[in-house]
Image (cartoon, rainbow, N blue to C red):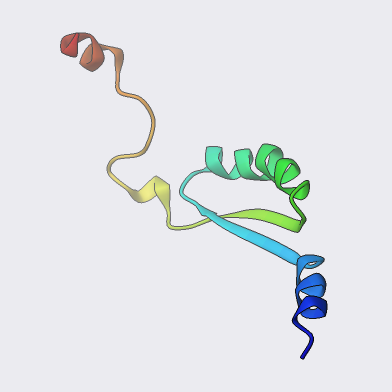
Length: 72
């Protein structure tokens, strides 16, 4: 097998699937990061939500201002 030919054909079909935890990360990957990665030879970049963030007790994000103010 000619590895150079196999490598060239695999590069033209490079796909990237990124697993994310929240809708914000999904939007970032699909709207910002994908267009950047297309310049590196990826033909398809997409994000998929994993898990169900709405059912977790604690979700991402910053702390409430009252909690941050006590630290400083």
